[in-house]
Image (cartoon, rainbow, N blue to C red; front, side, top):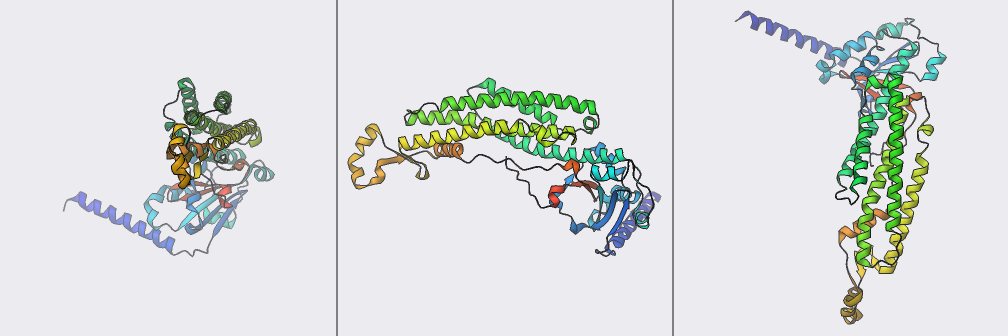
Length: 399
């Protein structure tokens, strides 16, 4: 047997023995044996994997953010992160690192204590322990999380934009697409931008300009819907044409309102908690109310028109008129259903779309910048466990 085959076999055997030893050590631990270490205000725990709700975890995938978080972790945690992929199949425990809220950290002093308690000695020692290092890592983690949520919503908007189809006002449509593209660019998380105040300020200024453009487009959509619903003497054919035209503006209005919400969310993320959510969303209530008023007006227009034209939307029927009514007058004396004729399902769907209840905001987001930040180290990866997820709040992903 050649010498390199002997070396390869020896190395492979050593790797198998090492992995088996790690697995045996992990399986041998009692799940109830939770170890905790607290250095100053940063707490490190080793807990059973079953205690973590994996559906609530948000992976920390930006290299810059990961390095900041790792710098705050004990040596043993960083070692297991590096080796995590090799022992994924037998891992039964995970590490949880809790970065305290800014108020708690400030109350504990401007720097973290490095006193070595017995529990701390068991888990390891922190490499970076300054107040600024902890707060910087915490804010970056939360900032990435908010931007992940924004990106989820923007992807849904992309799908809705693709369904707009033909739009008579091509200039308006191009402006909506351009606005969406620029907001998507801003939502692409970059740690280099987040960690420099000057770059974040520049991004906030750009978002202010996008916000202004968004509200101008929202106003235009509302005006066009109002113009289309101004007439109350339309016959059935005219009503259907008006309904089809309104639907394009109506869809754009809903898309723009969600975009305005996400712009406010991005501003909040770039401020890293320095500005309140209320301040970042100052314009939202005004345009939410404007949109609600437009939708109420549209709903009333459809209701009044349906009564005047004799529409029975639940049955997909409309009352016969003109010559059609005359032809069916005598048969209708014996069969009342002959007073009505069928309506296309697509037409009924458009009307129902425009008269449905207004969309609620996708979710109510907490101010996580001022809450404890829990980091989960599992299988060689780092995850953020949002404070809202711990309290059972489910995020409604419907746009």
